[in-house]
Image (cartoon, each protein chain N blue to C red):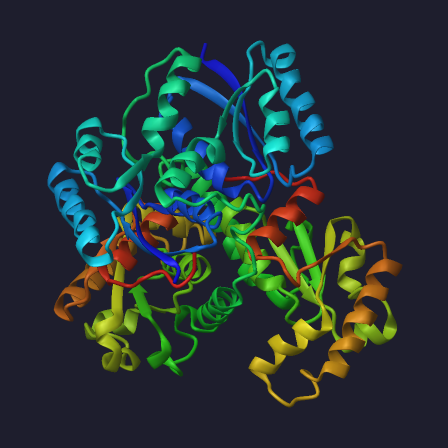
Length: 274
Length: 274
């Protein structure tokens, strides 16, 4: 039977960063089953005491002490968390001291500068990019394509929409997307509106078997979802992209994060927001 | 003059986690200006050698050595990165050893389990949630509201759409949203389609001055954007929400991450994806 451990992500803010960090580290232990609990906004001593009580129940309930990934800026609150019976790995504690030494400056110890709306230029970039991407999804308009940072093309359900939304949300990138529809594939040419913007067009492709599976969830037993049709569309789309010198990426085994990061990296686009 | 430092985020995968971690730590040093460069997919020794060369140019170009936040699973690749002249803070190195000790298990040292599409149940959850959220944006349909995990209401431009998309993308939560339009405000009642789902309705509010600013960017000098009208709409929406026992959150000074995390936390919803 697999070892079972309970993991807490405790943060004085959203907890998103410690969740990402902790989850990434936990994937290194394939033989352990982890039950994850996030406790965000632990920014006072009473809240820390309540969190510690919850962490300390773990031994009784699970049979082994908890793992705690934490990010607590305030020393007094962090000391409280450190009193729990779990193994505490505090990001702030472990990294801020070497950084203070290197920068020759004390850290401000002010909670909550990260992910904050404080930087309104960043915030406006994001919202503008999200709005742009929503209104340029799935080829709904040919207007303002000159404003796009990037334009994704690919057959229906190859992952364009989630990738574009992710790029807008996380990187502040204006990302339009166009489906390659049967007419484009038959004519073996890009949607005409894109010709003037070819330098910023990137492609997504996908294994026909996976496409068949995805499309079948939406429209089972349709011609649209048929494996034969998926094979034809993918082959025709790849031919079209090659002919038009559009670099494309296989999305089959990649997460949205991976596709978005790859495209950005290859297209030499920089993050607009942190 | 502010101290200027160059920072590298180096990862064998997307680099998103070290970027988030590093950026969060850097906000603690208000007196330093940071220039950030992400080098993703550094998963071979030749790529590591090239990355190190880039890091080492920093001293000549900036006058001080670089800071390097890294996450490298492979020991040989990490050793290469450690040879650079920058201050290297490797997440994997600093956390994996205490974790191995605690779990009594060696880490697999397999690159790239995080953010990977490997977990197809998670992946499907996300895509399904994104599609649901896109097709239930801005009250476009009253159908399938029983499937929603959460329904956000608020006046136009109070932050509903980005928050819903973020919840879908990052947490796999099906999030619908409804605008509170002048008719609703005058009648002082929720959009009728929501009455049966009141238990999962949450509100967003916003300071009238900020709303005026946001709306003015889209439609300057309109009645819609006028400060007077924003004041009326916000007051009427808050009155409506209070009357209907809808808990609401002020989005004015919060980032999308913060709003989404707050709502999830208050609504006792759990992440569906990690």
